[in-house]
Image 1: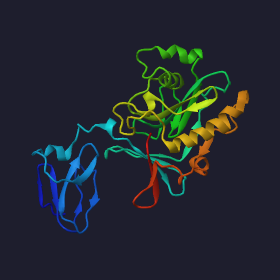
Image 2: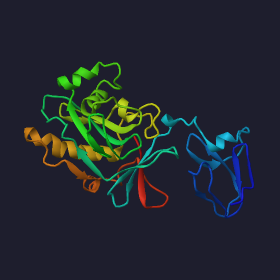
Image 3: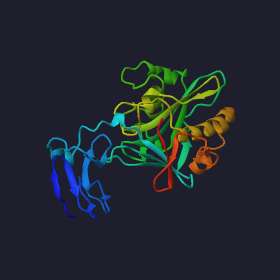
Image 4: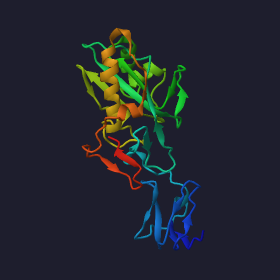
Length: 277
């Protein structure tokens, strides 16, 4: 393509030309348009610039100052409602695709008088399939629920190395390692038979491209977790859950899109998105 001008971190484009630059990561088609585009390190994408920034060509190529914690990701359900895609706001982060969910055999059985904390893990160090420090085999959508008053969990709650006294302790007990920044997940709890969908360490960790500053789970994953917990895990008793693997399509078949104000239809009309909560 023809670059009319590159200076001050700004790219000027001619009509109908195609931009294929910026560290080989961005590809953007521009048709019948003349204007100035500037890379916004916060949004992780090009935007129109009314006033060029001060000259800094290096910022066009690499943006180490991008602030992940201030741009929440989008949870996107396909039009067929058969998968959830978690889209980070930063262009150099990979999407996370969740087609199934699995409740771990490391989960405790449900007892009415007890309190529990649960985590669902979507990504580990950029991977959608991985093994943890204790050789637990995980894939995107891996769920573990444990009794917060059990001795196994309690021994980690006051550990200064653990990130998060409750959900962090469950993660440590289940996987034999502390929760790292590269772990993308969400947290929930069961108290007095009621599910609570908030967690500081998992739902709004500082410096994450996949979360914003809210402590609540996304509505799509919340719907899935509620069905798994209430219909399978809580009713199984000491016999164990009847089913451990769940298709997202099965879980979202009754999700009410029309009456959920946080949902919107994407521009391509093929997917619907919901800001991560």
